[in-house]
Image (cartoon, rainbow, N blue to C red):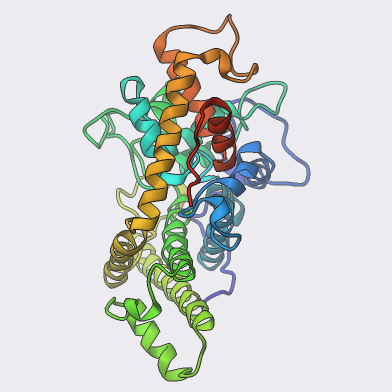
Length: 399
């Protein structure tokens, strides 16, 4: 089958008509499938709108053309739908998972996550994936009959398990430590079968996240002047693409060279995932989405050679972009903003907005810390800086 042509619905695709349903029963829609409703609920959520002012790598006011969590999520969704289409998967479920995957990120990206994890170290820590589950099952409050978005079982399991099982069959965490707090808290109320793999839609969405990160962080790094296109020449795949562009377009300007690199990189990664996933599916021959979950290994993946090339890109970006002095300076200051906000609210919870704190709230340290963590995690970069400026005499510029 030609890449990009929609495949017939595969037997191993998640079937909206066979969904395990929602925690809180609702009448079905006459015009939308279960998974389409999930996707629409994510798009209309407050947490999704806030992603437009949350850091991907660069803080929002460093430039209008850099990715934010929102634009990143949209790009992941586009790549994920392209993969779902050629593999015959449910595109709506795949899109819902792609759009929801970063809802739990705090302000300032991974710097904010590190800071919150430190602040909550004695109260279960902080994990952005667990926080995403908490957002869609508790913190979004838009419906009269329940907290959260009341997403389908398949969407919730895909959010939690897109990187693989979290426990053994007996419930023992696979990491050797405890389950992330938000996931452990929810698992007691709703069994998402943390011991099994997620459906192929979730596996594809996770790969789309990797593809988007690799390609678009290269694009943003080039735009920021953190490295040059020719610096990628020593890498597998990326170097081949750079040399191919030079041969075909020797007079191409810098901006178009970068755009062509990103375009070809995305195409190569998508085509590899499509081919490798088909190879694994042909060998495993799963007859249903349940067979995918119980297969015991991921079925959507990069080929071994492409996985090596993809790891090389990530290693390059880690050194040349994420740990660049300019980025690290801003992120260190961002961490200090989050830590200062947490410490202040812990000492003076009355400074929280009225809808978050009142005198009749539980006063034990754990409940207070988790509530403050939820509040800060929902902040945009901009609002975190506004709050810091309101509460403190001096606020970093983060540029």
